[in-house]
Image (cartoon, rainbow, N blue to C red):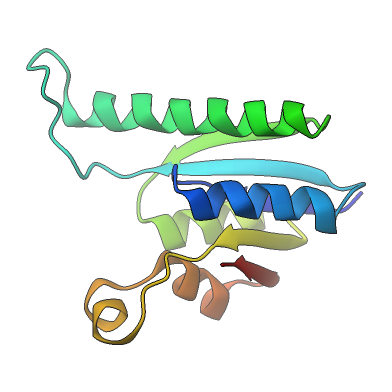
Length: 134
């Protein structure tokens, strides 16, 4: 069976990518991955930045499960951490992924050069084909 990876980050683009994966690959095994990135300090002093990022990631995966249920599809979800581009490539290799479908951040020009783009990094370095959904 074909294995499709859909990385999610809570963005509208990621949700659209998941829906597109269901349409493009109706019989595939869909895997949804979130890479924990500690980018915010929580307002609750009892919660560490890592715990906050993990909770957000768990929420993104729950959202993906809701979208899958709306499309009458089953998905497998995973949570990992590290540099997003490297973590996605590592997951591709470790789980024999055949194709990646992911959202675009919409960055262009100078902001893309300065900030980088996970979608661009994965597209350039992925060992499998990648579909970018705008």
